[in-house]
Image 1 (tube, rainbow, N blue to C red):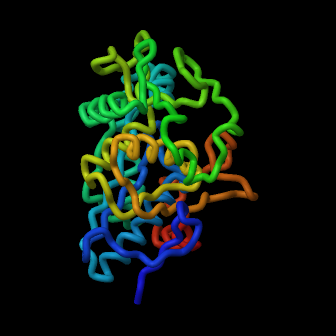
Image 2 (image 1 turned 45 degrees about the horizontal axis):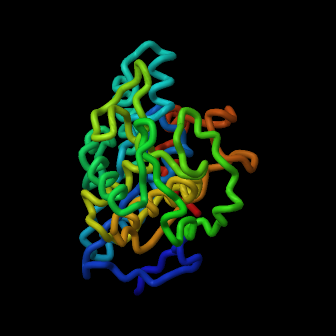
Length: 294
């Protein structure tokens, strides 16, 4: 029996043909560890655990990479609000995510890289993109030139000229308002790392392109995540990887949201339920079945 996947990039169901016979390579965008996980957060990891198990059951050797975003604006803001180190926020919530994965029976990934552990790979990718004319430095930040890459926005099927211009708080020196930050110049009191363009910290999109390249190579089988990541995150991952010279993912697979009353589960809407609270009221296997059902 052939395994078939709905490929977001092709907008159709496709027969799965692995890059390497008998092997499957999967990269999943994992947690941004700024808070403990609610059941909407955990659905992606659970859905792709089911996929991974099915491939293994069918006899494939699976390499499954799920990253951890342990530095971003929200983590820095939480650290300031709670008067705690930014890394303390990340560690606590990473443990909470792992506890939730364990409770729901998710296998640990083959590799679980943290963004802050891969600054060297990010610098290498930015240097290559600048050399190829796809990126530029401005005021200590590094931006991707979205108009330099034909095919940008093909995953989400959007028109660049019709995109709403982002606010871009603190992002100065852009050639085009739609260009996105791969590296953000250091601000007083915030964590930062040294680069050829000055001290700063990684942008959200850069980390996944760099870590996918490190652990799975220039081309791999499946890239996964929630449908809310299609734009801008996955579009910008593709742009960086393609601009760097990678073939990148051969299939794009996305899971749907967990909703309540037709709205996405979200802390900001006040309609979220923590996994740790949910498993007190229901057996974990029941929650796993509920979240794993299309």
